[in-house]
Image (cartoon, rainbow over all chains, first blue to last red; front, side):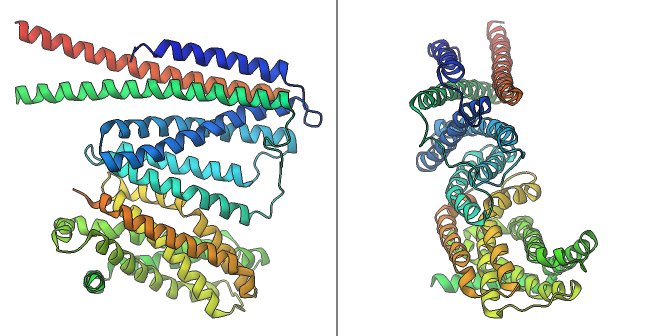
Length: 225
Length: 224
Length: 46
């Protein structure tokens, strides 16, 4: 929808992204042991954080839809899941690149990375349900699976953690970062959150048009039948 | 009263299966076939194969289980049986509990028959304490069936449900698979129950959580 | 360094492509809507 928020939000996202890139590459110092490679960390965490945010929104929207049966919650869940899958795909691409460059192997069965992979499968299945369910039932079925999938995530994480007699690859996920790196990280997360909101609104707008189109066609059908 | 209704519904499924014997025989043949295929894929004589046998066994169990789950609600679609079932004066949740029970019985029977076959065909020398092994398989199968039955009901509303069901079931049951394989493998190589206690607890917690969630949400799956 | 380059370019290309897909989807729908509206308008006028 070309509503009044579309352009400002796009602008804010762009500015935040540029600021984040400045902070990542110029403001934040180069890490001593990992060198430049550590810069991947910022984009990796930024997308990962937003993937989780997106799936949390799917969960909230699913619960709300089952309670109220308002179509807008259904649309929110669908839009958020799609963007979440996109962010998760990015996490799964940047993860191996980072792993390869800093400890010389493409994939580690580390709990966070593995859980992200399972998340990807779960929400791809969610999108497949949406694509293959009949029109009237689609929202309910997807919402039910959205709840099941979300409940599953902590258990998956726990089980993978217990399962892993694998090397713990990185203890420092934020805690021990110097202030300038933390600033860069926060800016990166904020920039990706703005991107998420922008894409979410755009996706919702498209679905609203789709809805309108469908209604119009329905009216026409009734008129000429 | 609730359990009497569940009992009647389970009896209906068992009777149906007893008369046709289609599903249980396909599941049995399939898991037998998996044994043979794995024997060709991984040489049974090698030591490493003996070590991964518990994993192979669970792959066979779950794959055969999915076959059964796919039929669980598809069978009710014929002649609009599902509608009749929903019009019957029982809670939807009773339908869920009954389907879990009957699927559990079918999957369990398959496991009881194919487990010894695995040991025979892979020449495995079993040294496990049988009680704990049975408990592990029981809890693992219960978790698989609890999630699987629920998702089968969900999938039966979609086109291409037969492909969609495994795509939904396997990611969600990752914890069951990890815990069951780890516990089975420890027990089969002669480990004591203390070594698998935390895995069994995880399986138990998983079973309880998903039975509860499915119990609450099942109403939505069968709504018309 | 090439790893950093790879990670960032993949991310940006991906996001750019997704935004583009969304934009095209929107444009197509709006076109369809406009066409439909026009058809209805003609119908009721004529």
